[in-house]
Length: 197
Image 1 (spheres, helix red, strand yellow):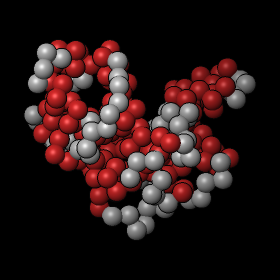
Image 2: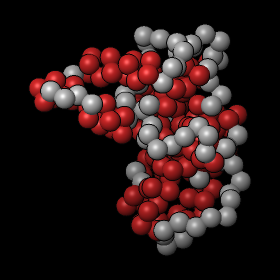
Image 3: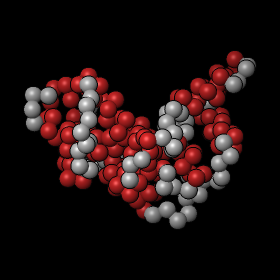
């Protein structure tokens, strides 16, 4: 799978860099993209991941993968926004719009609000007003992680390394319906090419 380059998350990078004893080599690792690709391949081998198979993936999954390789952090944020669009729509119709715009890009918020009919029904939960961005990103990570579970193991494992290391396929964070997550992710991925709001 040479056409899909996924950046290692800082958690994975720092763990890999900590194992490099020579300071000069550690510095070149931090600055050399090719070396990070080799480290990602080594990490995949250490985890016993099979080859990253993309054969048989549908067009929607390929579109998500393209967005993922372009900017996985942005895809996570957009996914969290679309997932919570109904909740956000209620917020921005009240006096809470200023704190929302202080944490979320206006164009991204408008994008998500336009898609609120595609968002799942709201769950009852609490969040701290100053941590709205964290709340959105956590929702996006849960959705991405749930979708990854539906992919072939080699591909899922490699993509997983672009997300925070603390997340696990086995925990409750990955218990969202993969089909719904795929739908939300496709909508988020489309925003990569259509940001002229």
